Length: 528
Image 1 (tube, rainbow, N blue to C red):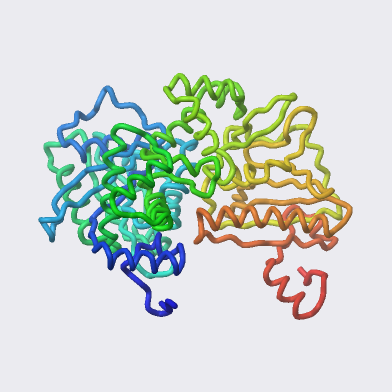
Image 2 (cartoon, rainbow, N blue to C red; image 1 turned 45 degrees about the horizontal axis):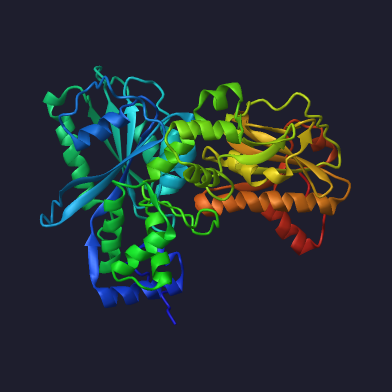
């Protein structure tokens, strides 16, 4: 029996604790048997809009003599990962601090990876072009706060904001300091200004020292304490990635056994920890991917981007591609047929969720929602009726990609009209349980909110409720997996005579309605 109520454990990493009591007990037992190893290792995520200098910073941290500007440097597509930027810990000079640098591309199409790799227990560096009026700071700060902060504690998260002058002194800050403090209380914003091309002024060197100081003194979860054998396996995998991009489960198990981890469950615990930390990609629960352990996550993610940014997929076909085109793109980039099969599964439902299989014109194809036309099809044929069941998911802040993932999760029920699926970038029409349902994202600027709007038509109210329940479950599944701290409010538009004709009907809070109905035994809505 293990009772840790009001006595939170600090030694097992959070990624182990969330696996439950048995995993914690195994971890503590292994610490006792193997001894412990302290690791000063952190994932440093360099994020921001495109062309702000992220890759330049990435290069300069590894090599201060890197040329700026670099004529050979291209905009980052996908992510670049460089492990092994090391320096002596400022307070413990005998210990090396290992920084794994992640450089994220800043184009809209690349935002889909944020929810998988922008994680807690990481250090965030937000780059902005100091010459631009708009640097999209609200989005970046909100996504960092959402994915990087622990909602259960009051610990602040250090975020280094680097304003890149690019030859021109910054005349106006892209954000208001006091507003940021008020709106993002859990973020400790540390601002620095730099011109990467002017190495002689010493600011780049000072920036590097600032980063080292933050890492040594403000990253609360370090050092990471793990069993000694785990550290040896992690080093073996690190050494392997220079020669191979992936291994199978049998080879992983053999490495674990060679380093003293014989128990299969303990091997699984370590695999989950390394996956959660972003060291490897291993979707153990997917039968198609359980035997596919990716040692270089950027290799896999960039394979996905090769498809998503290909001109024929993105421009000519507007998000649709078949197996032949996929094979051509990946074969040209050197991916083997076996790797292609695994990478395709990585893109589908319950994994990265960027596309789904469909039958159109009698042929199997794949559809990537975020590349589809933004406007809904002209032949949608949707006429609201008094019996339409309406529902609204209201987000004060919605991370990009949620509606696309919802489309992927519900794709089996998307209606076909003629030879095409009724789906567009922001929505879809479902045909399920004797009902039709229109689900779409709406950026409601007049109300300052973003919503997912649901309308369901069908003869029987119980059928309509079943469809709504499925939509709610799938959406909440996305939240649980990727955005456990995300705020979302469920609303029911009023169906009174006046509101039924209104452009913006009054919306009842769903949970309040449930409480009222439980208390009063009434099925009708309260007055609007």
